[in-house]
Amino acid sequence: MMEAQKEILEKLAPRKFTRVGKVWVACLLAIILASLIAYGIQLQKGLVVTGMRDYALWGVYISNFVFFVAISLVGSLISAVLHLSGAKWATPLTRISEIIAVAAIVMAGLTIIIDMGRPERLFFLFTHGRLQSPIIWDVIVITTYLVISLLLLYYPMLPDFALLKRYFKDRPKLSRRFAKLSLNWNNSERQKKLYRTSIQMLSVLIIPVAFGIHTVTAWLFATTYRPGWDSTNFGPYFIAGAFVAGAGAVIAVMYVIRRAYGLEKFITDMHFDRMGRLLVLLCLVYLYFNVNEYLVPAYKNTVEEAQHLQSLFTGAYSTYFWFVTAGGLVMPIVLLVFPRFRKPMPLFVISLVVVVSAWWKRYLIVTPTLLHPFLPIEGVPESWHHYFPTGLEWTVTFGTLAMALLIITLLVRILPIVPIHHAIEEREASTAKNREL
Image 1: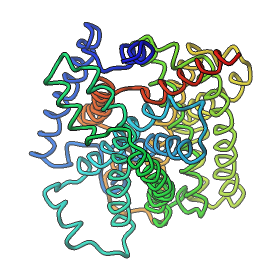
Image 2: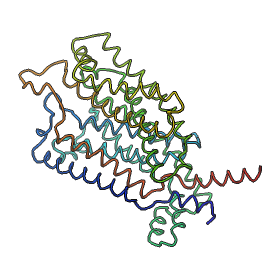
Image 3: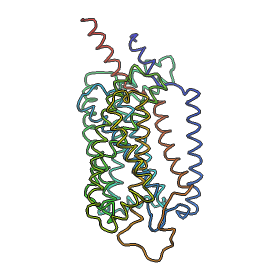
């Protein structure tokens, strides 16, 4: 094995957890265990242990579901667009993006099951589902999206697994494992042609499916006649928001991985600078959709929509609303115009604020609307007119977030984080160019 290959493999090959990594995993497992206990109580006693009632029949669980769906968008689209366009600068980010997409979409599906009062009836969605229902569309598109995302994560790693098979030849058990994963990859011209064709096909397939999953999720709300959801703008509104949330998640994860594994030579300041520029553009687009989403109902000013907007602008949800607007949209646009805020550390902090704001944005999309229906329910307790998650709901929700982080952590641990064969090809091309000069 050439020295350049060996050097890159030593840096990018999967490695054991450090002490900090083990503590991190232990903390995530503790949160997940607590959430499993809480979910067991919910299964035993029913959804009455949550804050959801006849008014707020969707709550923090559905907010969490929409958040996971949003996070998954950019991961798959970044990978697909890069494969199709041939852009080289973001190659080190594709694997990170794909891992985030898989973790998020897996947890989106599990969150739907958690929200069901009778999860044992999930099978009926497939046996008795009606195509007239957007919920069935959501089930179909999420399943399809998960399958394509897994293939788009796995298939580009075949050359990397073959390299790792040779790299770990002194450790037969590990070498055999990577040999099986590589599917007998030998770098032949026939294999490379099939490899390129397959990745292009997957990249083309996942783009309409990725847009479809967010559009269908938006339709779940828009086809329900309620103030705040009664909008034909909801599809692109959801997609624009998903781009912002997903880009923030990719930036946050790439910073942590770079620091944890010392990948400064592979994930450089240039990558952060360009992701910062991309985030500004996405925030500007999403800000436009937000203005459009609130300006039109404010202009019409029906009684129900006025109540809904008042609860957001000056009422019970105003703190969350202005935090989301300022922290998740305005602040990134203003700060990231300046190059010093596109450095790794400042951009990481900004991305965390964007991701947290994105979660609360989904909460604001779901909850206030349910509390201001066009046709109020008569004769219900006053407590049903308000909603805030119970401690049990928060515990289960934090458990799903911890599970998503655990999936990302484990995949980063067992998979090559940066495409190794691309890194080797770029190193060889750079060396050849220097020799010519």
